Amino acid sequence: MTTATGIPVKGVGMSSGNEWKEQRTVILSIFRTFGVSTNLLAEKIMDERNSLTEYLTSLNENSTNIQFMIYISISNIICSILIGQRFEYEDNELNTIMQAVRDISSGEIVSIVNFIPWLQYLPGDFFKAKKITLNSQKLMSILAMYVDKKKRDVGDITEIDNFIDAYMIEKNKHDKAGLSTSLDEDSLKKIMFELFMAGTETSSTTIYWCV
Image 1: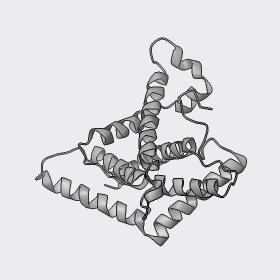
Image 2: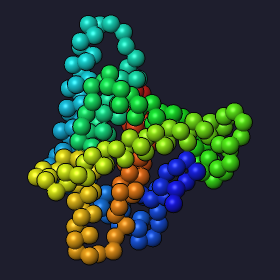
Image 3: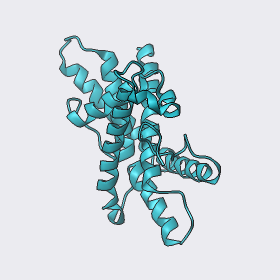
Image 4: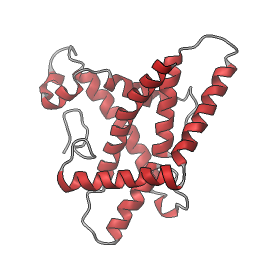
């Protein structure tokens, strides 16, 4: 089941009951491990900070859009945490992800599109319903590509350094034990979508105001 924007009714934001409880428990467990046992989160943040500093230094005092650079750095940190890979700032894929997130989050009525789906069929795009839907599906497609790519190697993992691997390992544990579980690929993709939407705009805006 999906919303009008093509997003699965999964993850944490749209689930409830036992499914919500299980997803939340797994997510918290993964990030607790990343933040306490391995200090992975801090390492990824510091790596990106160093990359951003080097980039700004390389400009040789030429002007740049610092708000944009902060936004793209935050997007890169989230990419690194979720898929275990950071991108160069000019990378087309990173910019596609970032632009999709910005377009979705800038839509003031994104939730209304899901409750009034026929808005996307009206002539023109006065409510930005078509734009929101297109970018939501674009972002989900990119996330699905990385999930498909990573899941093929999950059996060979010796060191967990990203959310996809950690989630898939938890899913496999439940499957092998024959336990009923809500952990699946659609939920994983939806959680990644939620983390991008919840983390990018708020973090970058806060840092920008501090600057």
